Image (cartoon, rainbow over all chains, first blue to last red; front, side):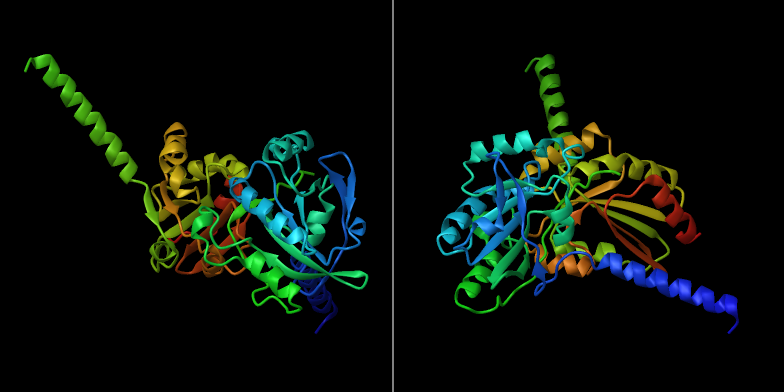
Length: 205
Length: 163
């Protein structure tokens, strides 16, 4: 193999490696998750460190404008009410850039939160870095985190349940089943699911 | 019955019939009914775009898809716009949208709540976010999650159309 060929091969390998790397962004179940410290609709910063008694968190990337998110609002409130007292509060995070999705601006988040009477923090990931770190691609997109000493471990990634359009027709409550397992000290039986959702609106560079 | 009344009744019937035919054009399928659309094995190249009327980037890219659709009309080519709108909003949102934007490509509605199972069957790399697009023929397959421009589509079509 001559020098040019070697160089070519090397470059190809580097390119492939970079490609591979850029595709593997975001968390997988079992990963350690970074905590959060983001602006809430009430004007305060909310951080995971403020929840000394929590056993973990139900992090839901969601927003105002997406019909799938809207369809789940009441269910998310019910989930928060049920699991907050068991140690798993809901933390809702709006991942969208407000220029790309004007209905998801901070001021519109405040309005929506009041209209619906959200019982949970509704945080803005203003620079979208947490969204990218977690690998949230759509709304709603759930990440269940369990505290383990000083770490947060990702235990479930995916959908809330198996029917976005009709809460009464739900057969599998993926999120609740996962939290129930964690509360019993088990691993979730189903720890990764998919659902149709609105794409996260990233800021144009 | 006076002639005028007969005419009016005639017009009402005609309008009702036309409206009725139009709404029947939105075919609603579950995943099983949809599967044949992504498994054709012939000389035609298919662009299958997953979208919804409420999806901002989908609505933004649609005009470019429509342009491509009309430009490649004479080729062995077919575009299918697969709406993921809620079934309950066919009359209130989907049909008005198609009419207002004068969409020419065929629109069908994929309504199947069990998306956790069928998203992977469509493409394992798909997270479920829309827009998403499949371009394929018997020799070629491409899947993309996210928006596509006219240039993107043309580049792929020019290289892969079977002429």
